Image 1 (cartoon, rainbow, N blue to C red):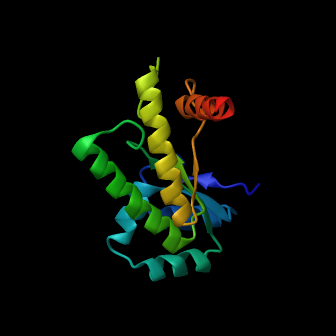
Image 2: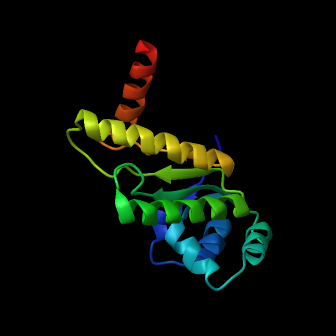
Length: 159
């Protein structure tokens, strides 16, 4: 395990400010808030960003968050998956090995919803693997992705 600090703890700061502050505080790893990174990359190249990280001895342990992958449909689904592919590319370019995924829903899940979520999660994991990125679902009070994974395992076990 490699300890890191999350940019969610410094929301008003920019990506570059966070890298500097975290390094000055002695951290060598950070969890990137994707919106901050995307804003940074709008004005700085990926190579300049890698240099910034190298100069501060900072590694990017994970990127947060990607939502909208499990239940969105139609144009909304296309938009979420376009963002997802773009973010996977960012992760690959900057050597971020893990992308945190949030569930689209909470509460009771019917069989149809569960089936759609399983298909979408499998598809997302396949795409992520193509970019050498692992997907992780943070623990929430109602952990839907864990329920989906358990249901998928149970289905495969019965088959």
